[in-house]
Length: 275
Image 1 (spheres, rainbow, N blue to C red):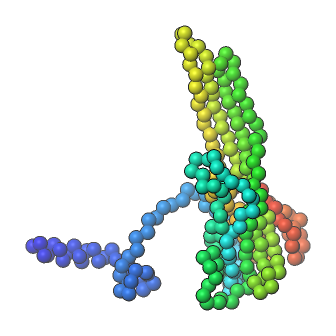
Image 2: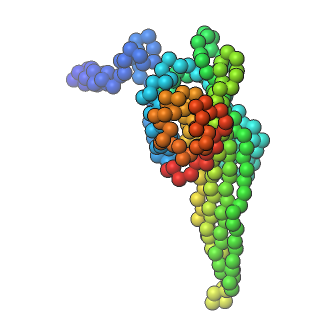
Image 3: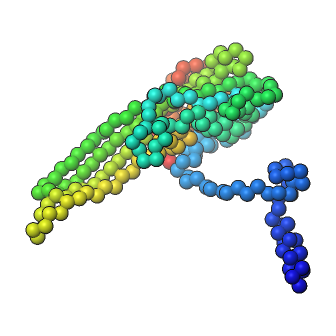
């Protein structure tokens, strides 16, 4: 009976194995590699309008057979974060944002050669190189108030961070710049609260309570804006994509930049209200 149960368990367990010829795990291709599926919140995915534009570009087929070389995403802001909870020393990722470039190009229908982990051992014919740079990061305070009457009152603080990044589309062989896009993304910070420093029934009551809301600079300021920059340079380089897909995000880009048949100037967009 025990042997029967053991054999039955093995037979039942084999149904969970992944036997696809394309799966990893060993020569027998029957060892599954467990991967935890962790869904991201919808607010930090590429914004729906930009995502739709990338899909539109894919349908035009302008990137069919085109290969892009993508390297590290450079940080030239020079800003260090040493005070925030969980800070790693920098406000924005160091180079890893190139994964967003790869994701956007793939969704748009292109083939990507990644050089983030080094030069490929086998040369792949490529037409374009895509580089990204975080150009500037500025901080400011819109308003700040602490009003108390008889020791009790509200507090208010409104702040912001402004990040700018650029996407460059170059020829691989010559490094001649073909197109460029400059994107700006504001990140907002809001804090509301109340303080107390009053006497109630001969007892001094002191304290404060705050509620704050801060957009995440590390992810929300990068995912969509980088994808927008990729869509921008592709539509500049390929007129057919510009003609069929620009309408979806035209209000995010400089309209005068697209009046020419061969736009070359920077396109600046402030990404707001796209959630």
